[in-house]
Length: 375
Ligand SMILES: [Mn+2]
Image (cartoon, rainbow, N blue to C red; front, side, top):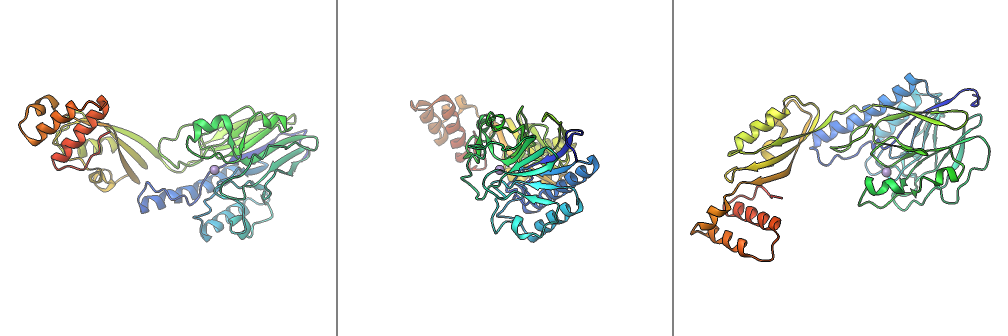
């Protein structure tokens, strides 16, 4: 293929996280979610075929090292082999790090599969005049910046494929994580690369010098952005254009149910049922509003079987939920809880918010309720 005459087209994806545990879901729902990830891989491969791309590229976290099974290896081997002779190129990340124990070294890959295995960028000629540079994480943590002291050593157009944390995006994408293979965007052109195809951030990024496809099938609730597989078209002068394709096989959504004025638990059940009626797939329910003090609310009463048997999974969380106690009236009572209210109202060291939390939690405990920890 002579690259100067015709553009090269690559299908990029990352962070599929096959076999991820989905700890927030029950065992059955989690298994269902993992099946969806497998179907998403099949969909991406099918898309590569439909689009007639020149290569399929994965920038890491294809699967989870601690959790993969022989079935995962067969899924990957079979899916990639069916694409033969289309090149399939992988740069391992921090979850699918390259080692003797990894699938990358255990599976008998077809000859179209190329896995980068060095801890520094090495060249793979993709077409006449187009070089793809890739590297591997070789441990689950502590991988250094692949772009430090790197410079291309030949002419033509240069792309990089690796798993790493772009430093400006890092703060927004992962507040409390340690950066893996951190790099600065300006290092990409400075090293002679025209563009970097990267993985690790789950929220998609289309930056001038780099592209994060984002996880293609939902891993969490509340994921934003146009995630999926990215068709990357590379022109003869190194200019890159990107088209995003949705490939998700799971349906995941968020619903907020307002419980203002609720006085007993059957009303809550009804409200949640009604809100979930038009939904499908996996839904996270957030409860908010002000409920009466007598409501016996237990999230375990809101299991999928009782509120929405038509859904694949339901997760309930308490949002800005409060209890409508009449504090002034309670403070007049000649009772233990009246005394409790007076003591808390007099305590000088409490902020207003904290005072309210102590009152509501204490009053619920005095009512014999430990069901609801109020925020
Ligand atoms: Mn990662």
